[in-house]
Length: 203
Image 1 (cartoon, rainbow, N blue to C red):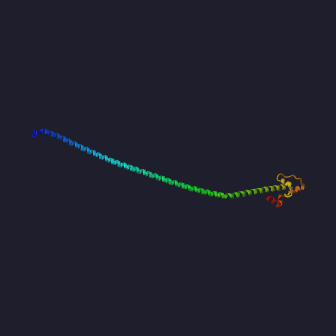
Image 2 (tube, helix red, strand yellow; image 1 turned 90 degrees about the horizontal axis):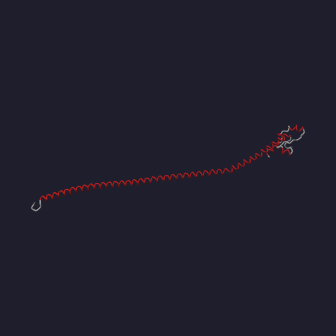
């Protein structure tokens, strides 16, 4: 025991205990500091990851916005092109319609202009046909009358009126002298006066 009343061994033992505790505290503090440093590194890593994710998200949003804007631009261009094409088609159709209407109007006018001359030509043709039929009928009647008179032996101008009306239908039976019958062959129809022939032909 020392002069001051303290036991040296007890003091040394107490100091050893304090030294051990202090060493433990120092080691513990060191461990805590290392843990804190590790956690700080992890936090830094998390911060970096967060920044990376935020950057990626921003880039994705920006890319999506660009893609959406590009899609909208392309859609607007396609719609505009389709509208311009449809307008051109409508304009072409309108021009074609106007051309067709103009051509139709011109053709109609030509037809209308030809109707009157064609009608006149038709009427004239009908008139000529009627005149020809009348001429042919008179010519046939004159030829039949001349043929009948030639067979009977009378010239066309000397035949009785009642026989002239029925000559074309049926030859009349006439009792004539033998010398007149014999001479009837000497009076051909060609000897009928020219004025009488013209009378039957052109009446």
